[in-house]
Image (cartoon, rainbow, N blue to C red):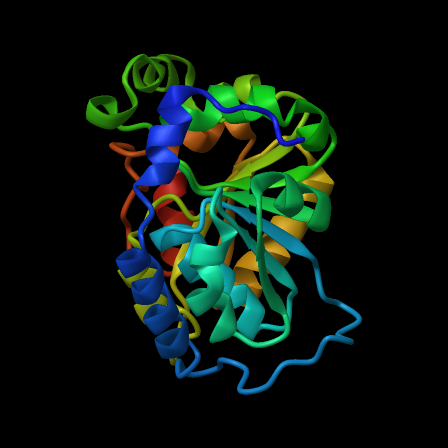
Length: 256
């Protein structure tokens, strides 16, 4: 039986509605027309990484769609998986829907993109599933939405705070600096790619994250360990920067 989530998390989940899911499905079709996107899918891709998406809203559905188009099997999760049918139905056989527990069991890698205030309860409810798992963390701590945990993230650093609440996970901070529209519009763009900053303490997890950032259509830039994730957290100097990897590396030198 799936663990009981807190009232706060239930409220977060209830915000998902049919309109938002249909919007995500439309976005999925739009992403499929981007330059460099795969027009076909193969379920026998030897290099494919199974990915479980925790939070299939704007960011989760956008990045998950990019990975499906790159040939990775993706399970999009929700407390109401049936509401994800328009999204997964438009993506073909590599996309499926399920619960959060389904996503964590399915994925070699998890991608979390839920309101940051939900992290403590999610970490508690799925502690055994998170243990030892590579997790790409796209959450942002917003004070007006997330409350006290946002102050903790700003004081201690968001990477360290994520590691506290998703205990045992091999966390890499990634995909938190841009809106979903910016990600959809710039994935696999012609010419020099947009940089995506990442940070983590686990070398293998960082290597996997680099691969997935590239497969989504961007250039990864390793900023450092989880402590350094504060540099591209909301309000940080590398947050919201539409620049190339070379430009980001140059800017990073001035911050150290």
